[in-house]
Amino acid sequence: MRSNRFSYLATAAAVILTATLLVKCTKKETPAIAKTTTDSPTFPNSFNRLSVSTFVHPGVINTKATLDFIAGEANNTSTARYNDYNNTVLDYINNHPMPTSYPATIHVEGGTTTPDEKRFKGDGLLAYAIALRWAKTGTASYATQVKQILDGWSTHFTNITNNSGTSFSQTYLEASWAAPNFAAAAEIIKWYVPANGVGGGWTATENTNFTNFLNNLKNNYINNVTGMGYHNNWDISAGYAKMAIGVFEDSPAVYSAGEDIITSTIPSVIASDGTDVELCDRNDCHHFQYSLTGISYAATISAIQGDNIIYGANGSRLSAGYDYMRAAYNNQKCIPCSGQYVYPGVEIARRHYQTANLTSLRAIGAPYEIPSDITFLGFTTYTHYNVPL
Image (cartoon, rainbow, N blue to C red):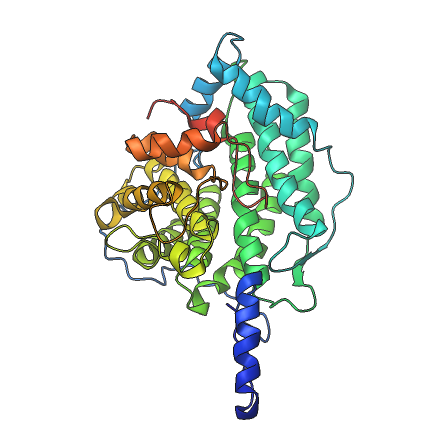
C-alpha cells in the first residue's frame, strides 16, 4: 500500500514495487513527520452521537463493575474464569519478565515485528496483564510493577522511527496500536479500587509523565493517520487510540475526534451487504480483523461512556461484518479462512450482540490471549466472556 513518486520513465518499475509492498503491508511514503495538534473532530459527525463531557473511569475496555465481577469469579477456584485467568493473564505474565530498561527510540518495520516493537507493545500488554492481576488480588506490589512499566516508558521514550525500506508512516500505525494498551493499564491503576479498599497510589507526577507520553504518541504519530486517506484498518486503529487517550485524559475533544473517525470509516471497511472489504481486497484473513477488532474495542469504550453509537452505526454494520467473517471461516466467501487465527475482538463483540455467528466464531479460538503480532489488547475471554452488560 505504499506509493512513491517516480518519473514517467519509471512508471513500470513503480507498479512492480507497489505490488511487492502490498504483500509486506508497508504504507504510503511520507517525506517527513508533520506534527499535528488539532484534536477537534476531523470527520463529519452524521450519527448524532452523544456529547461526552464527563467520563466513566475505568473506561478503556473495562469498568469498575466488570473488574469487580471477573475478580470475584477468578478468586473462586471452581469457576471457568479462574482457569481463564491462569491460562491467559497469568501465563502471559510468567512468560514476560519485568523490563529493566526502556529504549528512547523504537525502530519499526512494515510486514514484520521488530525486537523494538515487541518490547514497546509487549510492555504495554504486560502492564495491562499485571493491572488485571492487581485488580484480582489487591496485592500492592503488582500495582507498583504496573507503575514501574508505565513510568519507565513515560520518562525514557522519545520517538519512533522507521527501519530502512519501510515508510515512515508505519510509525503512525505502531503508535496507534501501542497507545490503547498502555492507556488501559493506566486507567485501572489510576481509578480502580480492589476489594481490599486500597487503590493503586497513582501520583500527580506519574499522571503528568504518562499524559505527556500519550500526547507524544498522539500529536506526533496517531494524528497523522487520517490525513493519509486510507479509510481502512489504519484509520480504525487511530480512531480507537484517540478514544482511549481521550478517556484517560478526560478530553472530550480527543475522544470525540476518535469516535468520529470510527463511525465515518466503518462504511469503508464493511460494505452495506456486510462484505468485509479488506478481506476481499487484500486476500488475507488478518487485516480485515484489524478493522473489526478496532471497531469492537472502540464500540465498547463508547458504550461504557453511555452511547451505543458504534455498535449501532449504519444499521449495526459491525455485526454484519462479523456475519461475513463467519461465512469466510466456513470457506463460503471471497477468501477461505478456515483454520486461520481469530482475533480477540470477537469476544467483546459477542458480549454485546449475542448472535449465533459470533458465538460460533468465538469458539474457534477461545480462550483468547493476545494477537501474535502484539497489536490489540488480549485476555478478552477472561475480561468479557459471559460478563453482564
